[in-house]
Length: 319
Image 1 (cartoon, rainbow, N blue to C red):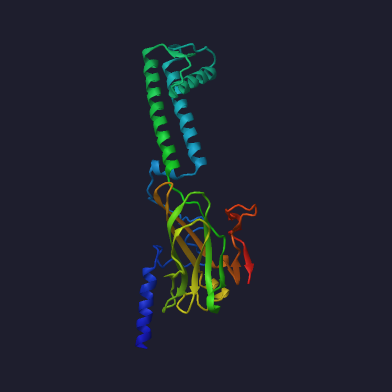
Image 2: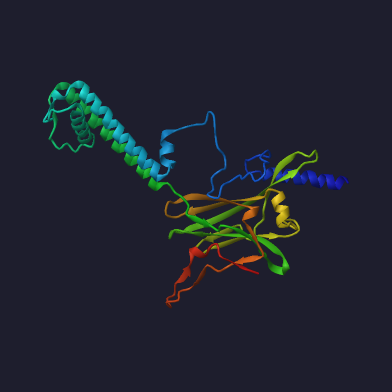
């Protein structure tokens, strides 16, 4: 009895040490810790941090271009209002008309000064509009420099293009055993080296007092590292007697609210930086008693190349 109690306490410590930072209190039915795209399934509210630079670098390209366009339009609208307040009589070449027509011409003058194009159709005639034109040009130069820096930061930011299989599989393994598998491949043509895979299983169980707690356990892999990734990599966890998946049925995994969390670390030679990629598989994304179909084969055209079909990463065959 004392031996079993010591073993249980040791097991509890190991599970706590494998906690990825989510804690033990997320125990709702079908609560997912990490989305399929690798982002944390967490919505922050309240007093969270905000930095303009990081948001502009990390937002999507569509939102970024829209933000730049809105700034460009709004800044020149503001300058056009200021020019109208100073007086359109201080702008040479402006064709007097209605308020809206004058505002449109002032806006175009602001745009041409802001971008330093300066067609010369309209020019400042008073000291006030000359100061305004100088300030508009100065703001435009700063804005162009900032936009260029942001564009460079976005283009130079290393992002992994690792492709994960949509499903994980429970497949036969050597000597009549079973294994948990998924596979990855590199979408890009660049070289990734020194890849390291960490796979952690998370589940919910009832404690001695009936309280539901979330547990974590690192899954030992058949191979945790590969030097290069020219083809695909089948990441395999043998389900032996010491595996937390040993003897489990699909119904058991569903009751456990199981999720397998994956972290891939690799060195990208293009950026000369380390990149990371996340993914996770819940129990409903397991396919049982199948194997992955091969993704690569010799070139049918007869060349010495090997063909890697990325579209086949999800294809399986029944055992």
